[in-house]
Image (cartoon, rainbow, N blue to C red; front, top):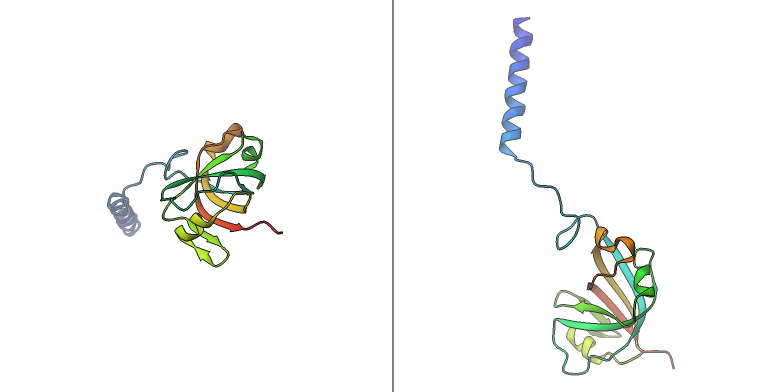
Length: 143
């Protein structure tokens, strides 16, 4: 019995020191920057206003949203055009052009697919917070 008691005390001391060594972090935020869980919002549409050759980052891209995934459906019903922020971390592709050159080469009515992350709580009840694009794929319209 004495041996069992000593083993139990040793286990409690060991687990107690681990708990003290690694303090618990706070709960993750439900909205705003760094929130969890983040969900993918995918918007398909066209460029409403061409950025032009003077576009600099960060840039607010005006998109006429025609289709979206289930999470981003509120953007289809929102007042058009929708603003999507494009930063230096956004991957932009237009044919063989990439980055800022691709952004400057965009023209009105170019087809777009915008991928962004948003907090699930921020999208509740049909809300449409401003998105920051992770990726923008564009194509000139078929002629």
